[in-house]
Length: 111
Length: 114
Image (tube, rainbow over all chains, first blue to last red; front, side):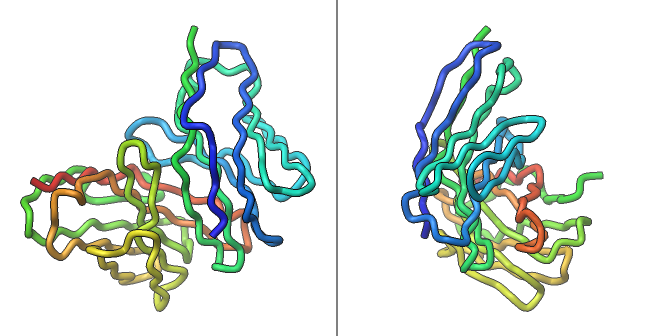
């Protein structure tokens, strides 16, 4: 299984850019990388997904190097409302897309 | 109305009791999942189903069973609840590999086993 490793927690201040890196050394050729955000007592919410290079949407950017053994979620100019847990997942293609969550990164944004 | 609905939202039960958590979805997705969340452990996959006739064990299926009654319904059962099954349980759906594989979660069912 392509397990993921991410920092347990991070602190930031409003207006800063936050980068959260995830390692997935055993990622397979057809696997995708997906990031979710979770607020307390709510289900996780999809943020972004990518396969290689860079993906950007209205919320975040995802950077994936050529070897795909890691990925970095970039949140531009965070606000207090970005305080949440962020999960990096690998969608395991050869198991029909089974999605395994790691421990996640607890991001705390301070004023 | 929520696309993925879980019932009950909160349940307190006693050790040894049978408990069922139900999940229904209106998204028309074939794939449904049950996860449990414990503080500091993220979400762990219990069971998943890719269609009505397909049931698969996840990471931590011991002590749990599931039933996929229809495309829209996926139930999780604890035949004999024990205190270490106290957790927040989430149901999720996805449209499979043809789309992004994005998971859509319910609001969670908080279970306490005394």
